[in-house]
Image: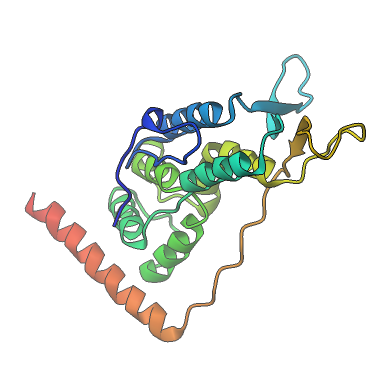
Length: 231
């Protein structure tokens, strides 16, 4: 069962909220940061690193300055960010991949093993939040007539996901506190996030599980094709 869509502004200051169902990435990012600000009493400050491009400033988000707070509130804030990183269900992901396949042209060197191709993409897409995957897959055909390489999708996915990943790492990292701060008093600290968090290793899929997924995929794609041809 999908969580009930709840606007973050209706949540209390100390309880995690549910993000709205099928909202776009911009709306999720905005409501997430508004909720974190209310929960913690202050807005996380992004820390940027200049890329050093001559003649203009162009920076990468590498960290957040997180004012010290209680462990309970920090955990609740991290739970909110984790919620925003929830991946898409396999069925919806396969459906969107099927629609993208039907609305783009195959590259000459792509090969004809459609089942294996979509299976690999679906597994990789599990590393990204559902709203970001939905936004990228449903707009990719407007950017190019060709079926995208994984590198093309990854660049768009990482750009839209990076802020949340950096924020989560900032909230869960160990703070660097001042040596003059007593143990009973919260200290101001900077939580430094790595450039690219490492994803958890995926469990190996058995041959039987792969065959079952393949049959579901074929059935799903067949339903999409029938729906298009009858419309």
